[in-house]
Image (cartoon, rainbow, N blue to C red):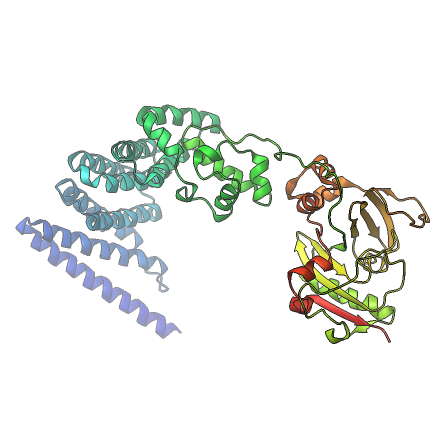
Length: 511
């Protein structure tokens, strides 16, 4: 290993020697005073600086990082000189940015703060001069100033603000002439605002920003910026999708939404609020109001569909497998075991004929078809065919599953009732209903009222307890805000043959 390190070190030193000889040769050629010879020298100086910086990781300990500062600075100085002299192509600008980046890295590693500050200020002056003399490359100069502003953040905050402000002024003039690339203008505005926030309170920074913004941005430009499509705002996919779903295709429309609406569509991700508020601040719009969920759901005139299902609260990564295994064990305990689908006629067909559901008062499990699915959040939905609607408080499958997890049964009977019953530790504990089927046996013991606040905490897309209560009775809305099942096995069979559900469908037979 030691021999290999010695070889690597020797090769590195050989490469540096070659680079130093190339620099010397290129320097001698600059006697011609031709620009191309100077630019070749700048290129070789940059390569030498890169090589010297690489010695920082030299395993032999021959660290020559400090020597990289001089060639890196000279390369920048040469390129800035010829930039002002008319070398303003985008390719040349890229080479200058690479040289500046290398120089900034070298000064940071070596610790020459003042040298870095002065040189990057000189670069800012060069970019401003070139933007004035060569308007066709204003965009390139704006990008260079923005980058210099970022570098100056740790060196000279006032100079960083000045660089970012210059970039904004250039972009503002370009946008006023031709309203193209609003994303580029907004990006420069964002850099300016972030720079202003260093060392200031948010309120003070935004006030200063707004003064500068109103000074450089015309009323017409502001109106056009506010109509920028959300796809051009460099937002995360989640935020963009939330805005599109809410019918807010532009910044202006986004500003009319509320925080509650955004949270509702983004699964409660608070980062989406910050993303949108930041863009609104850039164009002088107020942050999103707190608001509330629009149009709270009202109770329906009548209960529409009939169905029953069980919701199992399990947040484990393998929740579906755990619940499926518990179901098999519950049926096996009562003598029912998994069988082939052929034991149940018609399940291979869509719209398979089945009798209307009736309340099954049996307390022992038997032949059945059970669909197990992960609905959303931490709820696993369990839909039984023969115990689609079980006896209130005595649903055998709910009792069995509640020995391990909290379980909630949902049962609706068309035009008659909507019932929820919570089971815990094998016993029914809480209950809520609208209406109740006639002829049901009285409960052994009264049940406590269902805790809607807990349901709101469990899922609800960040809906409040009040909103969950308001949705109760409206099966579709209630399922959305609580993430509980909104249909039963018969509705699933209407969408596709039950055999198409693969491992999620279980068939039990009893001899």
